[in-house]
Length: 321
Image (cartoon, rainbow, N blue to C red; front, side, top):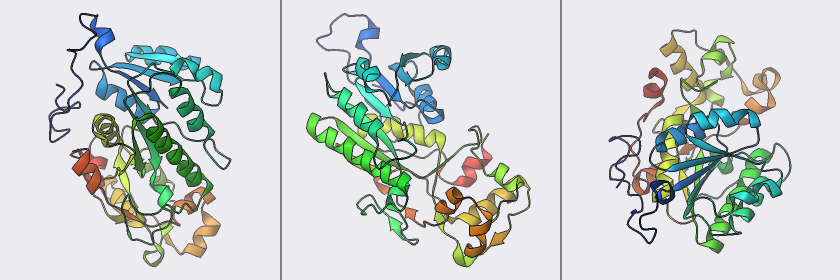
């Protein structure tokens, strides 16, 4: 039994790993432990690995030989491969009991060939028991400030979010065909003081403007550590082909979020501009985030994954070092 993979406050109930009392008999422990493969082992992937270190055998796919020593030093077995080169992925077939897929789609194109290549390889031999895919809340599109629950139809307004919808459909189809319990996590803005660019501080120092109150949009957040814990919970508790909103309890408009952060850091609040003024002052990427307004509901995450947020609001998350 594994109680609270990240400590006693992680979950409301014990998280149970499969028993070692199995036909494997007296094989060495390294062969009896769960094998978890992380695809896309960046900041959040490394947090997932730290959460599971010592409890499972960890593996991670990397396309960079420069990361091999880093991964090994963290107790992670590095596997060299590239999601853009399917033959390099063949070694992954039948290798892991559970998979966390956090790699983004390509930066252009209509779909996600990377996820398609990965799912095809995972079907070649014994499929994993469970798979967690990190998607984006952008698949909902602009909800005009309404509550977004997981049953809401997807209406992506950007090509970036459209590629995530394609990936979600591939993951769910893979789960139905193979019997793999595939959980899809819809993730909003990720933040953490110990994450590169993980707080609004740099943007505040640059005096980047935000929208005036009349034009402002709701935004959603999740602390990187809580996101990692959600990934771990979904590996064992996620229901088959189930979608989960993974966000904290904060309900703030974007400008109010930056005002709050400025007050916490003792900085000047950002200037407010109209939407028409923003179009001449801000990048297309930033404008795209200011064009969608939604309030995500995390009830399903709490009820089914039994996750108790360590950082339930951005105030608790931004203040904690």
